[in-house]
Amino acid sequence: MAAEWDGKSRGTVFGFKVFVFFIKNFGIRAAYTLMHLPIPYFCLFSRKNVRGLYYYFHKRRGYSWLKSSISIYKSYYVFGQTLVDKVAISSGLRKSYTFEFDGEEVLNEALAQQQGGILISAHVGNFELAQYFFAERLTNASVSIVITDQEHQDIKEYLDQYLKRERTHFIIIKEDLSHIFEINAALSENRIICITGDRYLDGAKCMRSTLLGKEAKFPVGPFHLGARLRVPVLFVYVMREPKRHYHLYARRVEVKPKDAQDLLNKYTDHVSRVLNKYPLQWFNFYDFWDDID
Image (cartoon, helix red, strand yellow):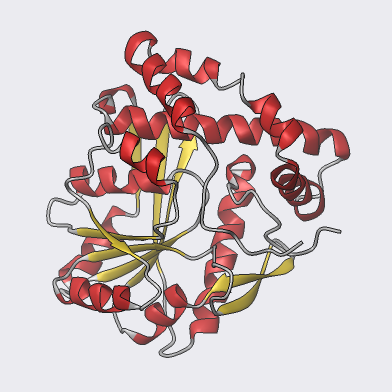
């Protein structure tokens, strides 16, 4: 099975409408409870996704068959909770959650250099919520989030009426590479560039490094940018914890000039440590290591 991600996330407009309805009319807890209904469907009919998760838990974490199977269900449930949280927080229920900012000082130090900065994250936890941390805690921070434009357009159009993103600027990755110019322009304005480093699209250039004891492929872009642009580079993750609490971790990275491989190796080491603490929040639901029979 090829390890490439296809650029799209699963889901339907109807499914999101149901959860928005429950959040608005019955509350967040009811929406969490509702999450138990679609999980058996995904476990039974999303074979590739389940195989990818099983490989992660069984081969990369060393869990038994039983613990791996239970962990797949739990992982889907936690993922569903992060989706509910994203909609709830974005639609005005921010006070229903608590936040912890671990590394605020390194972000302030990076901004003080007036060079902008690159934050590299991963598809673990709920990284999209980082924009709310920045808006509330770093008053002088301007954020540009680099994303692909492969999500289902009908879902995006529906959710846009609930997700308040006016404080955040999005840079869309394009085949003509025009996003590189947007990134450079944003950095020149002392903006923070947020980008994930753990997914690459089929046909794109990739690099290799070891994650959780097994070599995998990673996109070239984030690590080449971080190693060549001579701006502060940080690893940032927003992880979900019990009782509607989110913990943002920000860590400054010592970058060797023009050594993208060294930056990638440091990144995979950081991601491994985060996953050791939050094993259920690995949300790459495919054959990430290209190692499934």
